[in-house]
Amino acid sequence: MTMNRTSADSVAVRLFHGLADPARLEIVRLLGHGERRVVDLTAELGLAQSTVSGHLSALRAAGLVEPHPHGRSTFYALVRPELWALLAAAEDVLAAAGSPVRLRPDGVVAGAGGAHGAHADAVGSAHRARPDAAVPATRPGQVH
Image (cartoon, rainbow, N blue to C red; front, side):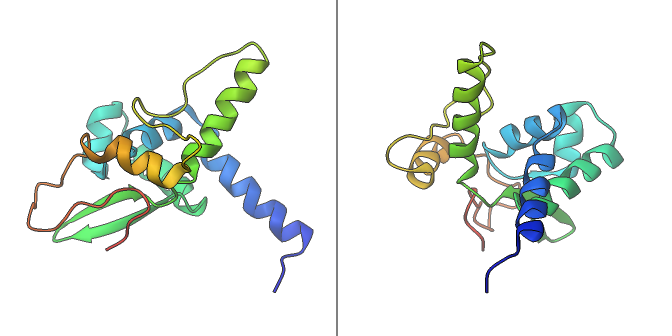
């Protein structure tokens, strides 16, 4: 079944809306290094819990993050490793327009090998495991 133009456009709008805020871009960068709880993101960003939750909601609506409950905690992880290729392309467009910026987390590359392998290799050693180490940590794109 194919989407009509309006449906396809609304999906694209949700994706770009999800990335259209500096705090959400920073959340994406942080999650690029591993899962985080809302409380972790709140401390790292210096934002209110309700604000961080709202940003995570927008990223969920864009299909970029998913929550993973573990005991009394819920961890958020990126689920679309293709995001790195999109952000790399945006970096190229912005650089060509005279506004070079770095949108991806340090160490994350989206090269010829594809975003999946490049991201997995780049994040592997820097991945931050959850405190409940009995449960294996996930990397973006992995769901357990």
